[in-house]
Image 1 (cartoon, rainbow, N blue to C red):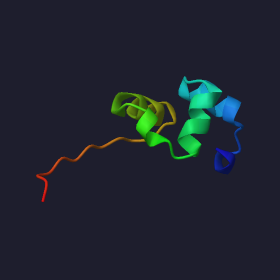
Image 2 (cartoon, rainbow, N blue to C red):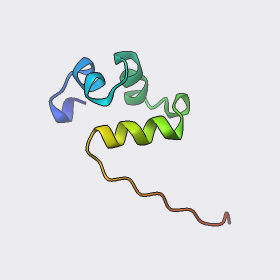
Image 3 (cartoon, one colour):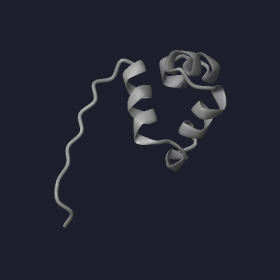
Image 4 (cartoon, helix red, strand yellow):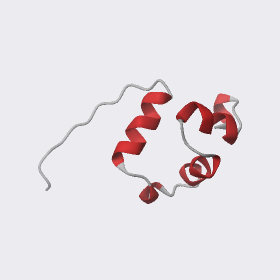
Length: 57
């Protein structure tokens, strides 16, 4: 979040989550988040979300 000039607490407020959840995300603990939560956080950050599905190799 430092790239955006926000503290973790400020980012958490913008994303609608707690500061510890932002910390988890920044530490790469992606397995602690559901896809729904990640999509909602991305949307709250003003990001455009696209999902592409394809057959496994």
